[in-house]
Length: 490
Picture 1: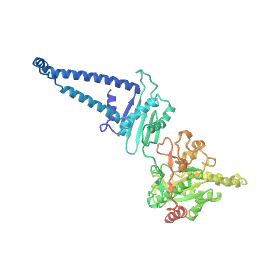
Picture 2 (picture 1 turned 90 degrees about the horizontal axis):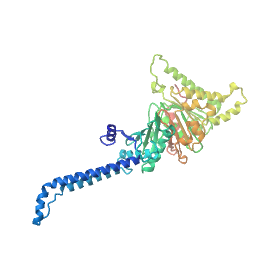
Picture 3 (picture 1 turned 135 degrees about the vertical axis):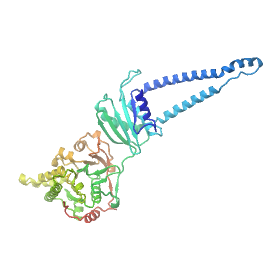
Picture 4 (picture 1 turned 180 degrees about the vertical axis):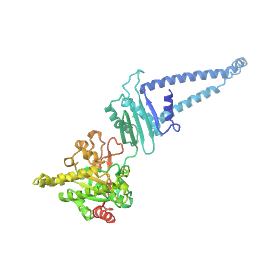
């Protein structure tokens, strides 16, 4: 009983704290029956008390009033308590109606509306159990929730009687229920399941696409950290290596442009290396801006050797003082040096051309295995040296770089356009039906960011790069000239 009272207080602003608690251990049928019983008892008590008060208030008038009958005068009747009781009854009915309204989907108080929605959802999806007209009902679930301007946090403790498959589906079903029952926009930002506790974060504001059209608006910082959408950022400490994939016309090139320009504008000491397996626009842009660029297997191997040399040199510089206890990245230890980004685009195209010529060479002289080994080495080892790798293409190059090792080291994975079942397994290790749905016609995709406790990937709104206001080649040249150009130095 005390626990129920405490829970009730948590749901009463301003008395409750930031997190409200709600235990659902009765079906809607049971609640209706109990409410009907309470109403009958309330009316009986009201009628009895009203009658007693009227009688008591009129006792002193009974005998004088009897004598008035013979004198032709009317009997005196005191109706004050009857009027007070009727007003009290009407006021109680008004409070009950207001309470029900404020705990309905029409409520202006979101926390109170949410209480009613969670009660109804518990019954609709049958979380506690199938029930009948009896009161032999012992199973329960516990909700806790908080509401702010930015997000709605909802936690559900199932009590151990809900199977894991149903637990995994609760967030999706709750999202659909909230959309169905209200007129609000509901976005599932995140959800996770830990020991029978399902944690869900919702918001009413969908993420928005960024417009890259002005260098002065781009974020500046010592360590790479800049937004990709209104709500999602690339933080190199959490996502040191990147993967961007998508079919032709999916928006992949525009995203890569946005990342490159935002990266170079983020810190004047940042440097760029380019590998373009198709020797197309990206390679032309790199050479125009005097950025180290590779389009052939030989050039690619030399560029990667230079990058590994820089990585080793950076590690050597970091480890000069063997007594240094600080476990930090190169850019944290030497903030004026900058980060290096290696963009490897269309590796599969480069591989198909290289493997033809490799067939006529001895195994030790074949170039593609050497290129794959060097890229894999950089992906695995370069994080602490503040060297980031961006792997991009129409498909994940598992045949060149392997699957599990590279996949586990990619802290950010973006798949633009329509996601297939193969891509869902290959990129996100999930079934396609468990992924959110993106609008491929609007250059949307799916994104996974490591280090943010995401349970599932999110819909990604790829930035719009405005080539008219920021011509890519000219902007790239402007940024690299300001940063000295040439091969990055340790």
